[in-house]
Image (tube, rainbow, N blue to C red; front, side, top):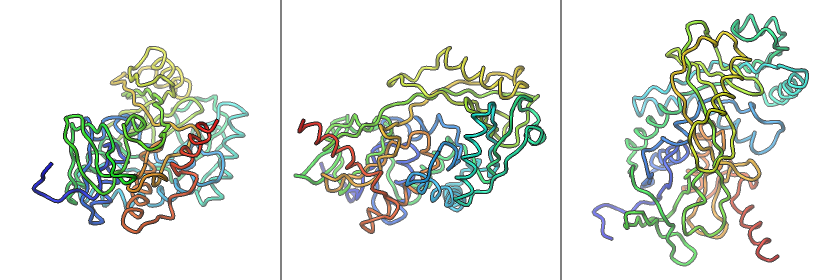
Length: 382
C-alpha cells in the first residue's frame, strides 16, 4: 500500500483514555503516531466512568499498583492543565476530596486500616465521628458510624477528558482514525510490521500499542494470551434540589459523585456479564437502593440517565503494561479495570519512555505481559 506521507512509528489500537493519552504522549515526544478506533474515541469504558481519582480508594496493601497509582495521582494537576491548555477543552478537574463512610463496625475497621495505609504514603486524612460526618455532608444518612476523609482525592469528567486528549493529540501531530477497526497484528518474523484493518487495508509501522480495553484479547495475531475480560458497570445520573454534595461520598456499596451542573452520578455495579452492555432492572434497582441508604434525601431526585460500560479486568487484578516478551515492537497497555482515568498519565509516560528511551522505571515486572505468556507455556507443557 502506498502513502503520500511517512509511515507511523507507532499504531495505537484502541481509543479509550489509555490509548488517547499514549497517542498524545508519543506525538509530543516526536513520534509519528496513528490511533485506530472502531468507533468514536472515548465512547466505551472512558465514557461510562465516574472520573474519580483516588489512589487509595480500593487498595488494601502497599505494592507496585499503589506505587503506580500514586505517581499518576501526584502528576495529575500539571498533566491535566497541559491537556486543557493544548486542547481548549475544560475537563472539570476538581480537587474536592472524598468521604468514605462506614455503615458497620466491620466497615469502620477496614476504613481505619486504609487510613493507616494512606498516611504511610503521605496522603492527608481525617477520621470523622458520625456527628462530624453529618456536619461535613448533611445529606448523608444519620446511621453512619464514622467516615474517612481523603483530603486530596480528585475528580474529572471522563467524557470531557477524552475530547481534550483527542484534540491535544491531534494538535501534537497524531493521526486519529475513528471508525476504523483493527483486526490483526501483522508480523515480519518475530517483529511487528503493522496492523490489518477490517476494511481490508493495513497500516505499516514500527511498533504497535495494544490498548483496546476489554476487547484487547480479541485481536488476531497476538503472540501470547492477553486475558482481559469485560466487567460491566452500570451507572445513573440524578438531579435533586434537596441534595448538595461538596465532595465524592462513598460507602461499601455505592458512590455519589457531584458534578458542576448539579447532577449526582451514582455508581457502579460490578458484573460478569460478558460483552452485554445493557442496563438492567436489577442493576439500576441495586444502585437506587444503595444510594437511598447512603443519602435518603435523594428519594425525590429525578433520574436523568442510565448507562453502562465494560471495564477491562484481569485474572490478578493488575494492569497488563509493558513490552511483549515474545514480539519485538509490541507493547501492551490494558487491564486497568476501574482505574484507567487515574492511571492514564503514568501509563502514557511509561509507554512514551519505553518507546523513546528504551526503558521506564514505571514498568514494574508485576505488570508485564510475560506473566501470562509463562502461564500459557506451562499449560501447554501439561
